[in-house]
Length: 114
Image (cartoon, rainbow, N blue to C red; front, side, top):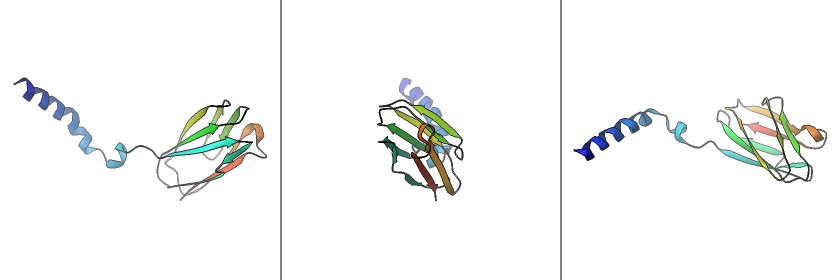
């Protein structure tokens, strides 16, 4: 009797999950961009359009950086030797520039949604 009640409660809890699209249960793709020697690596990142993604910025420089993108409407200060996760999307097809605001002229990159 107790087992039957537990099984019924579990079924009631899990039943709504079957109504979710498979993509809702899948983890968001993660893209790691390393900041080293004043450069983003890779400086050009290609992702699938229409999908939410996690940008992980790994600051391996000795100085803080400020990841910024006007097109993505994101900015984040990242201390040296740390990582920051920046959620973006779903993105329309196109090019999305990003840069380190502290070294804007030399530290630039682009996210391309296809």
